Image (cartoon, rainbow, N blue to C red; front, side, top):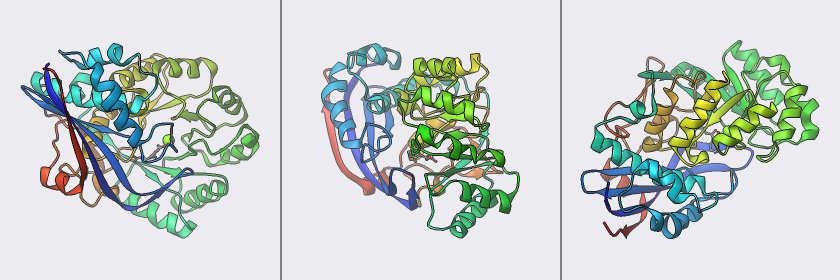
Amino acid sequence: MKLSGVELRRIRIPLVAPFRTSFATETEREVLLVRVLGAEAEGWGECVAITEPLYSAEYVDGAEQVIRDFLLPRLPADVTARALGPAFAPVKGHAMAKAAVEMAVLDAELRVAGMSYAAFLGATRERVPAGVSVGIMDSIPELLDNVDAYLGEGYARIKLKIQPGWDIEPVRAVRERFGDIPLQVDANTAYTRADARHLAGLDPFGLLLIEQPLPEEDLLGHAQLAEAVTTPICLDESIVSARAAADALALGACSIVNVKAGRVGGYLEARRIHDVCAAHDVPVWCGGMLETGLGRAANLAFAALPGCTLPGDVSASDRYYARDITEPFRLEDALMRVPSGPGLGVEPIMEILDDLTESTAVVRLGG
Ligand code: OSB
Ligand code: MG
């Protein structure tokens, strides 16, 4: 596929409510969108990097610069998503930047081929259950009200963000009020190896998993923690590639894997991680980064793979945004429908998108 140019578009989109994690309180997302302009089709990609380098080393301004200065000049004249891995390999890191370009190229490529993301990835379901990630709140009553509302809307699984000082008590309160619901927690690296005994305090609550308690680099620490607690360990930040996933499993650092295509350089690598985990009978679920409808469409395709046996952080549009940039995704009878049209199966609504756009730059390519 020959491309005439690539548009790098920055939007700012308000969240319906502040989303507080151990590393940031987000009230809006600054999103970088990548639009590839092909002769037969265009394609859209969404970069999941956030404003500041607090989740991982990447951040949105850096991702934009890396795409413009180091990735676009490396695009083959006749580009396919499969060719991007080798073309981008000399550039170290910057998985979210690479993933955004891959997502757009794959969208365009699949539109030309008349194939959906879901079919391309090997999805086996048309609908998937939805989990919801619940931020840190100012009080337990506020948390319980939020969880109550999400359960009422049909979410199949609740994930509580935790950090030191907001962990055992919120979990206890949710269990006491809502009983045996599917419940898990995410620490975003907020603990240390010295917290093993404290984290074992979560064991009596029968959680599905604890996500990323220790720093990204600390695979050995997670393996040691897995010996000290009965709650299954799930890794998010640490799983930066299929090789990292295989290493983590070999070390016993986790028994469940969160996959985010952005974190691992794109959907092709995400699919490889899914396959590594499936070969080890390790459950996978699709993580989220508060994506707009574009990123959500691709996440839903991934969440429909056979190895994604736990509900993902793939919630309805209105959990994040009052006005999404695509037709909103909704819960239908407590399930999310996986897009089936060519490519992502959704397009941005240009009036809304233009309204939210802060800047647009077009890079012309040789083709
Ligand atoms: O760790 O899963 C995470 C959002 C931003 C950065 C990191 C994470 C998250 C979420 C949101 O938990 C999940 C979602 O998109 O619903
Ligand atoms: Mg996480």
